[in-house]
Amino acid sequence: MAAHFDRRLRKAALTTTVAAVAVAALSASQAPDVTADGNGRRTTADNAPTSDTPPEESATGNSRYYTDLPPLNSPSPAPTAGTPSSPGSSEAGIPATVLDAYKKAESKLRQSKPGCNLPWQLLAAIGKVESGQARGGRVDAYGTTIGRIIGPQLDGNGFALIKDTDNGVYDGNSSYDNAVGPMQFIPSTWAWAGRDGNGDGKEDPNNVYDAALAAGHYLCRFDWDLSDQDDLDSAILSYNNSQDYLHTVLSWLEYYRKGTHEIPDGTGSLPVGRSDDPTTGTGTGSAGRGTGASSRPQTPGTATPSPGHSPSKPPTSGSPTDPGGPSTSPSTPPTEPAPPTETPTPTDTVHHLENAGTTGFSAIAGDTFANKISTRAETKAGEAVGKVRVRFTVLGDTDATFTGGEKVAAVTTDASGVAVAPALVAGEQTGGFTVRATVIGRTVPGLDYKATVTERVADALTSTGETELTCTPGGEFADPIEVKATLKGAVADKVAVTATLIKSKDDPAENDKGPYFKDADGKAVRTLTGRKTDAQGLLELPKLYADDAEGTYVLRLTTPGGAALDITLKVAKAADPTPDPSTDPSTAPSTEPSTEPEA
Image 1 (tube, rainbow, N blue to C red):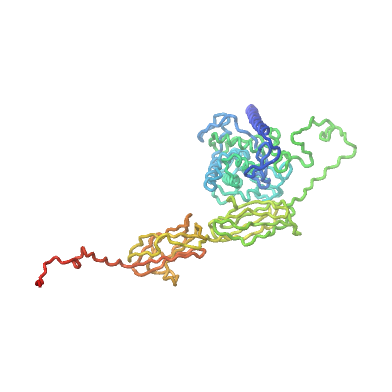
Image 2 (spheres, rainbow, N blue to C red; image 1 turned 90 degrees about the vertical axis):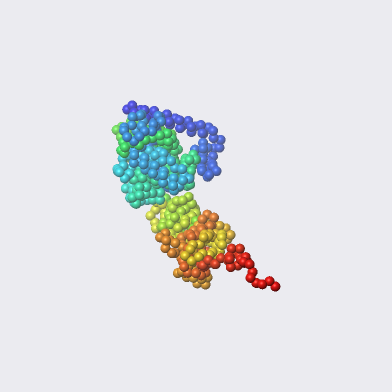
């Protein structure tokens, strides 16, 4: 009881601090309207950040979360072993496997998206708030939770309305979606954000390694820099759009940054308060998140109190809520309330998707596709359906991505029913791939768009040195060959160059004698491929060697786009040196006395 009372005191103290900060911010504000900052983020009069991410595209669907706040005492970092002895250390400690998952996710994001600056402590803060660190680290040796962690069904009754998107595969609910796993992903978000964090070939939201890596990618998806406070706030709010959620996560982030330690799996503290429990003191934690309703689920047919108001007194005897007292209502039997009927959403009316004009979808490697993919959502009668979320997914063996580096993007259709995907950026891998458009929350056939990435091109090749080189039989060419590729006069970088020793300028067949390159085993090679120009458009070829066949040979260099350059190679014996009259006895003036008689 004492520990529970102490938790309440600590929570009240921190809540009061947060409230004071909010009041101060409100007092300092001058503009009463909602505005946007220089980066397009929406702000309110008190400068509180907000999120435009709809519930069905947030990580959690704006589901409930745990409202426990950190201990007042700062954590004291300690080794793994032993039972924590300092007050609050069980909360400061993070189960070993869970902590390892957070740190591995940070390491991978540091390599794939270094500009995001994701700290593992942010993942720990979200993991604490979403699931109490996987229920205190109740995971198996591979990081999979022992028993699934399932949030409430998102049926619009106190929560956002998100109808089933996974046929109950992850959450066991074929009617509505539920948040799932230690990082509480809803299935519709996991479908594109899911990652394989432990390398087992599966993307499982119930595995802490997979979930942590997916959370990291989710938080970094808009090129946010999480070392910037505005970007950090935006990322957290996109995970769960609630000011209370933001403050709770930031509190744990600051706490973990001051220090934490590893504890054995399964020994972590279990969360107590929850945002849909009014006794925690933050019962409005999800009010306004997605539906605007109270965060506590209501029984169908009952009234929901207005936020901030409660009945002035308990029901008196004889009221309809007191089944034991006499009825004060008319003698007519009360009419049973009609079961609520669901109004079809725009998504419910979508029958199919149509191409809205995307044609000629091709780009050169490294370039941005000139056209954007556009899709139109239509009813069975062919009428446009607006306000529908369409997901675009890059499929196939390709490194092409949408702007921002992600392979999935979700866009809402406009009044004409059209959703336009973000610009697609070609990678370096050439060939064809597919972009598939699907309706989020509706099972209708997807619409596929074929895309092609072609090689980088150059229209000119020039030599930076001599275009005619000489070597003796059996020797090696002393001067290296370096060329520069350009396209319309500009540097052409990463352009593939093919170098072939041909029989003659009129016969481009590969020669079987004369100069040659060497492969890794030292064998003669007379055609080189896979070499590309650098950032300055330059390429230096490997050393050339000569066999014993004398003659004049041609090295032809070509690139995609039609650029070509011929280098002349001569293999000949060294010429006899010209005698030096000063040193050659046969040409030097005679010093012997003349035997001819004088005239």
